[in-house]
Image (cartoon, rainbow, N blue to C red):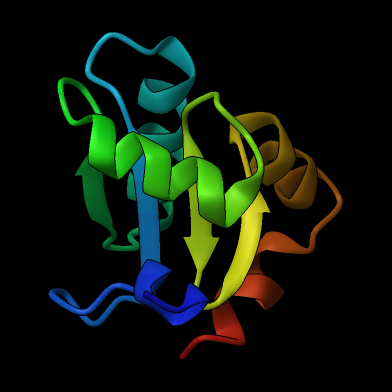
Amino acid sequence: MSDSDAVDSKTGSGIVMYESDWCGFCRAARRLLEAKGWSYESRNVDGNPELRARMQELTGRTSVPQIFFGDRHIGGFDDMAALESDGELDDAYASIR
């Protein structure tokens, strides 16, 4: 599997979020993406150790959410929120359109 496997192949949005149902930061990330009107592919790692291991391999992180815009690893919710606060999130999205 290549890093490009993180790219959303189902919805064509180019946004992939590795997440968990119980995670508050995941809910916050979903709210931000939905407020922007951006579709994304959810990859739920709950009960899926292979998918969680793949997420860790791609990101070097064990926490969720982990968000990709195309091949670019945005990071977690705090990272995405910082991009939004700095006015850079829309540009990151535009780069995958």
